Figure 1 (cartoon, rainbow, N blue to C red):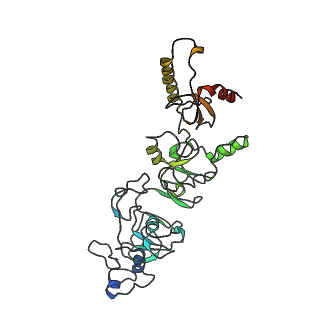
Figure 2 (cartoon, rainbow, N blue to C red):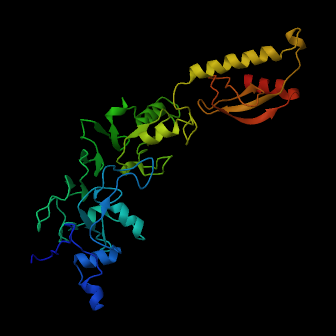
Figure 3 (cartoon, rainbow, N blue to C red):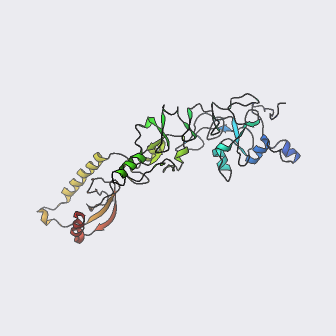
Amino acid sequence: GVPGERLAGANGVADAGFDGAAEKTGTAPPPDTAEAALALAGAPGLASYHKGASDDVVLCQPVGGEAVLGCKHYARKVRLVAACCGAAHVCRFCHDEAEDHTIDRYATKEMICMRCSARQPSAKECRECGSVVSRYFCSICNFWDDSGNDVYHCPFCNVCRRGEGLGKDFFHCMQCNSCVSLTMGPHVCPAAKNAAGSAEGGNGGTVFAGSMESECPVCKDFLFYSDTPVKCLPCGHFMHTSCFQAYTKHYYTCPLCRKSLGDFSAYFRMLDAILAEEEEANATPGDDEEQPKRAKQRVACNDCGVESLAPFHFVYHACAECRSYNTRVLAVVPPSEVAKEEAKNDK
């Protein structure tokens, strides 16, 4: 037969489980073979199937689709041989889940074809059986993808990303040090905005260059290597677009800095009207000077950062500076100390 090739089973896929000759003879498989790599990975067989997103319901599923050769993360007809431990796993995620260390994707040099079990250098086609193991292959990242989705390699990020390519549906922001989707509208670089604010004498915010090199605050996936679109929030933080859509069904502030995720001025003015009606309904007849003194609350605005006094209320507290209701209560000011606190604010 052909060196490195094994006979296929009834289903047309090579039966490369390590429970064959090695188990019968009680000896370990020869090193640098497909059987040895599978044994190190603890794989019950060579063939593995990609079942789409039905197995794990998560916000940021890398790949979906019908059941084909691959794993739960990617569709492909190969197993990569990790240079660090020699184990054969379908993808780097599968390796990191099974092993006690992380893989160096760039150091991977070999693959095992799922069709014929031939161990060979990484490539798009199997040199033994001639099968095209994936529609897309990157020799830099050692990445295979047979899902049919558009994939491109960014030379600046030095990783492969989902999309048509730079200048088509993505561009690389040098300040953010990452690819940004053009489908999400104009990109206002938070790092550049921060630098401009600092040049004008202000604090410029809190977001600096390389902000994409962090975790998504919702799903905790590392954003720099994520293959799902990423959205830049008005405050300058980032999260996956799918995470943003799920998160904003219940919350309207950034999970990191608590700034508002949009322009809520119309909603805030509606609250002004509601509180004005409550104030009028609870007011006692007489002159304003005869109205009993009420306690107030010292609040800090999450949007503008100013501390101010707001009328006592169980729920709503408006910032005296920007009139935002995105505030947090710091302390309750009793009626006897309201005048003194207001004098401090006037200064």
